[in-house]
Image (cartoon, rainbow, N blue to C red; front, top):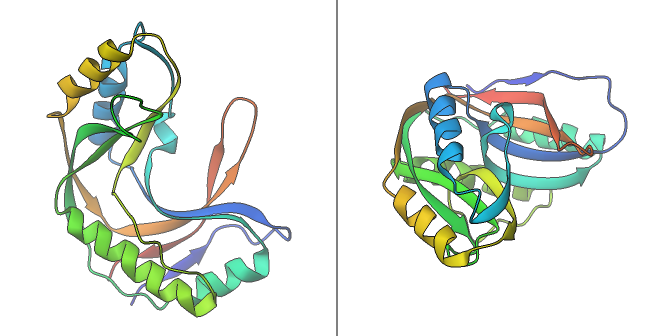
Length: 197
């Protein structure tokens, strides 16, 4: 049976919250750092996501009051799922590689398992009033594009990274995270965790 672990009982006000699978594997993290360094800084001005902030977002909740977070915790504590392994790789961009705003790495194999987990979370969140999201592409945001100086070069740069393979990672839990916005970027902290069976 999955178990939710409360990591911060001191908060009484609402928080900016999201549910994610955190990237904790050092080999994967090193590979992401390597990909970031391969992005052409002459083609675009980008802001890299920090190593300890890398994750697969399963559901962004936004500003959420503590009573609702408690209800979500109680609901998701009932979710039971098996551990699984995914292969991470391939670089892409949203909305597209011609006009990228977000640069990401995706899932090369077993992506349907993380999609299934997201759908199960969405299904259970309907109990507390949330509507399931229709679109989901498993990805880890690695950079945000601030300004494009050379669009063709940027497109070519991303195309060259499409085949990159970062490695395999075991998915053993998902986490409820708190995001605190600061001038130097967001700071993420774990509220609680639901582990696989």
